[in-house]
Amino acid sequence: VAINLKERGPEHDDVIFQFANLAMVKAQLGDRAGAEDLFRKALRAARLHNHRGLAPILTDLASLRCQAGAIDEGLRLLDEAKPIMTATYQSDPWRSAWVDNTRGECLLLAGDQAAAMPMLENSTSVIGKKWSISTHFGAIARYRLDNARRAR
Image (cartoon, rainbow, N blue to C red; front, side, top):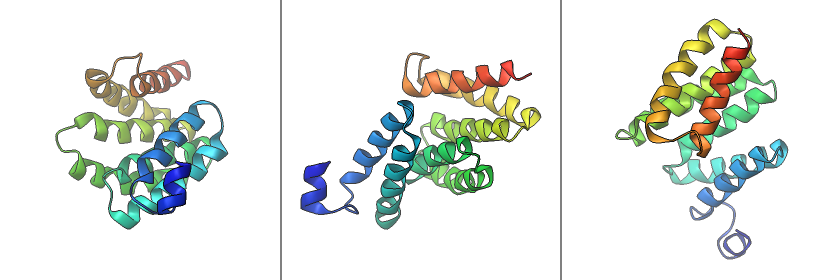
């Protein structure tokens, strides 16, 4: 990342995946501020280049914003992400399910379990067809669903 930043700058399309992947790691390690900063950098470059990572970045940033209590902002990011994800990844239904799963997380954090539960159940099923529980996406989807079930 440091080499790419030095040679190409923070808005070059080569750094988009690097920023997003580092952000995912930082989020899982509990460094939400660091993750958000990196997702915002990735988002800026992804918008500039109309990059295929735009919708996934919007979705993961939405999760962080909802976890921080900024539910309205998170839901707006998901509203933007959903049609982009659907159009960009037509042959990967798990990707649109990831947007729905993140929306379910946001709704649960907002206290709307009635809306969150079916969204989490349905999306976790779709995600599970692609990603096992031992993978990043599979584990997070299962964790969100389990949280919703415990909240009943």
